[in-house]
Image 1 (cartoon, rainbow, N blue to C red):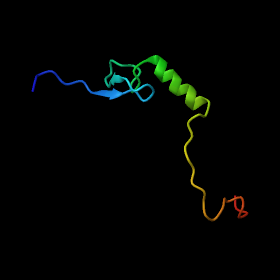
Image 2: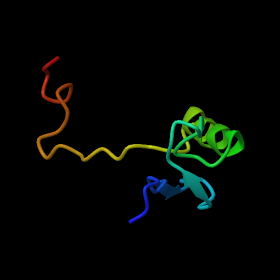
Image 3: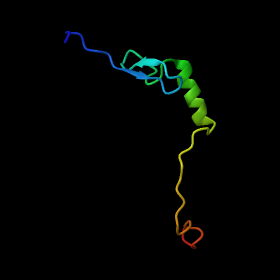
Image 4: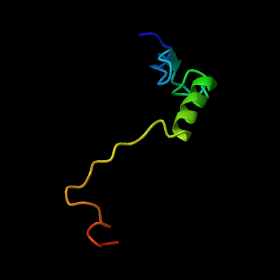
Length: 66
């Protein structure tokens, strides 16, 4: 092994390009500011959603509970 530490590289979650995972990359895990802003915009416009499983017993408001 060489004396230099091997830099970790991850795929940008937006475009898939290799992006260095280090403190020298201020946009990590993204490859660029553009990809970071696109992702932020998708969250802000509610394009991303966390799925919610329906409760078999119904919601609390349906049972008269609050």
